[in-house]
Length: 311
Image 1 (cartoon, rainbow, N blue to C red):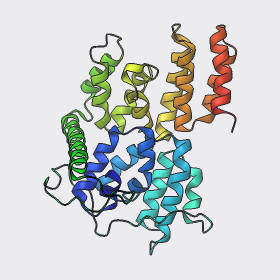
Image 2 (image 1 turned 135 degrees about the vertical axis):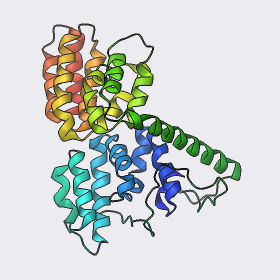
Image 3 (image 1 turned 60 degrees about the vertical axis):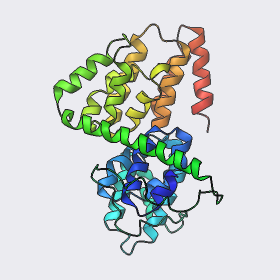
Image 4 (image 1 turned 180 degrees about the vertical axis):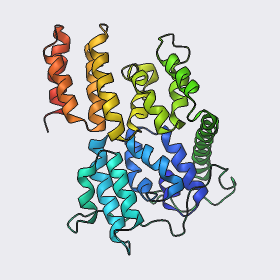
């Protein structure tokens, strides 16, 4: 259903689909990449498109996203126009600047994903179309689902989108407020468990500058199961060029300072850096782990090499 809403020309449904996609697992979000990529170049959807695509591990995103963008550009009358600039900016934000040349490479093949038939820009945060609006089309596999199933899924999507829309409205007054950032930072800097999950959820709709200021505090929670996957996703939503100089020192400082880290924590931080595409830093973590005094951490260093560094 999310894919159909993103593929259609109904701006309200497309916005609902983008907002609901924040709650998807990586596999489902990866499956939606071609549909989400149709909204690249639509300014009112830009923030959600950038952040949702950033949440997908870059190793898995690269082979899906780049051909889709290249296919869109081949259909453009002006291949060097605004859409090309939007695609280039997106790839640079995701740390995929080495793929920019493929956008206009005639040897780069991908599935055609035409832009919306109408301008179809997602709305300004207002309510979507009425609940009685047509559902539009059949499920992706071509088999009609029951009306009850379709209705239940549609309600779930709308509830999810409504939750994110309310979160955005609540976060709007906090944007650029240093006191709000300081409060969230304070909450994330304690282990009381009272505010950690709420703080991470609240950070989703903060602007990049505020979220960047919270990176050292968010890093502390990467290997804590009870708040997963929020820390990793929040970090991955940021532009790589700005994230890297803040994230990398924070990760290695935390690895050196926290004496209670177990071997699985080392793997969690290597996994985070791998998701973002920072292969050199993954190697640094492996090297540190391989020389650690704890034999379990040394064993994990070998596992990190096997999992992330042997292509």
